[in-house]
Amino acid sequence: MGRPKKYESFDVAGLAPHVIQTTGGCWEWQGARNKDGYGAVGIRDGNQRVHRLSYEANIGPIGDMCVLHSCDNPPCCNPLHLFLGTHAENMADCVSKRRHGKLGKGVLEGFMDVIRAYRSAGMTHDAIGRMLGVNGSAIRHRLAVVASMKEPDDA
Image 1 (cartoon, helix red, strand yellow):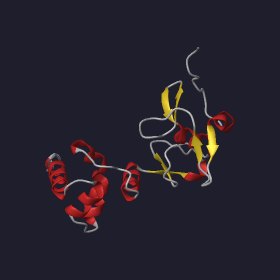
Image 2 (cartoon, rainbow, N blue to C red):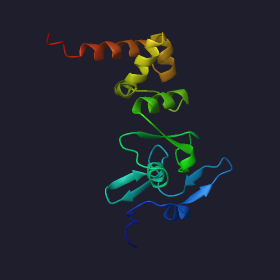
Image 3 (cartoon, one colour):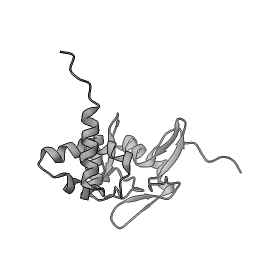
Image 4 (cartoon, helix red, strand yellow):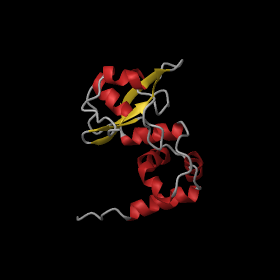
């Protein structure tokens, strides 16, 4: 048997045979999925997430934005369930939907914008820690480490 098909482009016609529609309107990818449950296909430049390809094919360019799911269903590639957001918005969406699991030591880095926003809004370290599944002292420590790494002004 040959190698799996490498898609040159992604279009609705090429998508249909690999999708089932659920009662909630999701188009669930039935092909390969990555460890997080997102549909994945091999294209010329490597593996791509199906929901990103669906967004680009049906709505338009993504640029350096993230593609988020309003349905919170990783294998869904229905463009009506997809919207663009920044990395910080993606992390906030992840936290608000409790999809982050328990965060390890190095993972907090991706949440720093969210942590700063919650702190600016008056949220305690402990409350943020509970949301992220870590101790409040881990939040306090990470903020201190990041603050100490900033370059001093050259004034």
